[in-house]
Image (tube, rainbow, N blue to C red; front, side):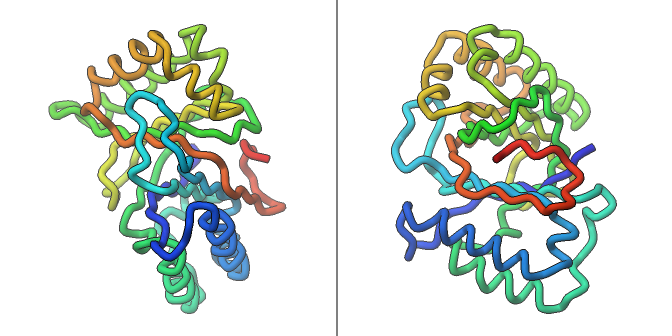
Length: 238
């Protein structure tokens, strides 16, 4: 089991698109000054939504980014930093980077890597909501079968370097039951793969069997990735 926090953000209105990733990186550097946070979260990735409409069916630019923080172990899920400075310092800086605090749009995710290609920096990230009547176990099973069906489609599998399906745990502050990540080498690869009949049938149409229509889907690029020297998990990003 690999657990991570995933949060969705709007950038602070004072920041232009090109300023957002460098300022978000500064937030990471501030976090690294606190040993408690480095111990709890030994790896992170900040995924910035592309500035221009990518032309992918169902994708939008409603949010500016997706943050991912991997926990060192699942027994740290409920742990709070011992250093009393952490929360006030980090949240004060969050409001300089984002429109709101991270905790107000966050979920804890149990990630299942179905294809483990490394180095792809363009992620098409979809936040899925279960259809009424499906319990958590049935939805999780449907998500895994969905991911495997995507990889069984040759036209899609050839372009997707990495595929991750995440099951949302507990009660999130962002409405989602699952996260689907499709990672590509380039934005062009993503656009080509997602403008095919295979994508329409195997991804969009198939999701209707177990998830609500029109999930939030963002085409993002890694703006910053970092791993501690003792990170126990495989590192998917350079």
